[in-house]
Image (cartoon, rainbow, N blue to C red; front, side, top):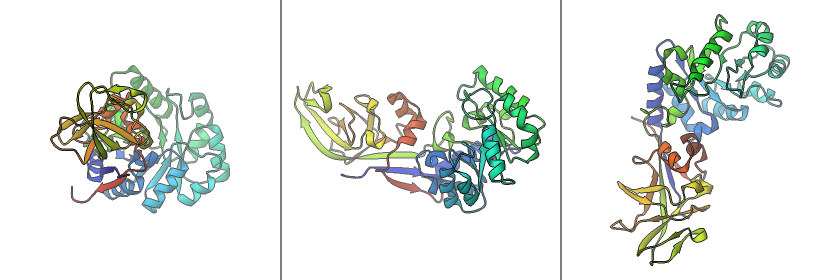
Length: 349
């Protein structure tokens, strides 16, 4: 089967980081979130490019991701692990020079007992109820933890993509109440928090989705273009059906292009008979069910049978496609399959 082409514009990632760095302000250091393999786009290529642009603090979800990023970066930049010091992570944290963000008394105990004196950070829960120490737990251990010189204290906003949501101000007040006067560098904002304004920035910001062209950073440069090859073109007579379960039936003579991609490649089944692909500037609707490896598209109106069609590109970004699929841009990016031939655009911007 022909290979789909996923073009990843590293120059656009760097431009987005610079824009978010400028928004973070001169007194705040801007890191970069490269978890989930840089949101599916390849941390081995993205992280070193960001490091060359000046990023010194990287954030990942798990120690295994941190180890992979360390292999790509070499020594120097600091790599923070959101999930903290999990059982079984001790050797990897030591060997790869990772900085776990301790989330609980259990993790504090594990880290202090197994790696005394090793770098660490702290994650606090300011109302999201996901990761981090709640107020009572933090108050109980803060004197001991702060005495061990953590590198960073952070929390995470639950509703930063909704600027007017009252949760933002409540969490900000709680974060200040828990950390003011602690004498440790603080981080509160990912992409959405950066856009909320300076009072949310503190010492370190950690943009993620905005680097990769996604909302809520509306001014982001597009990063990905996904072109899907046409395997076969056929003419369908009125009354004939296309795809599984006969969900689409031709009302007139129709030319159908069968495209080499499907839900095994991260193009969700919910796109069936809803999504649009593009031949240059011309939209081509998906008809019938998206299957595991194939999508069928109406190309009757094209003057010539296409060689490939774009599902992500200038006319349809990750958030546009996410709206059609009933999800968010994060899921579109992180679902992009491994069968795509990744091509990186890097160099003179």
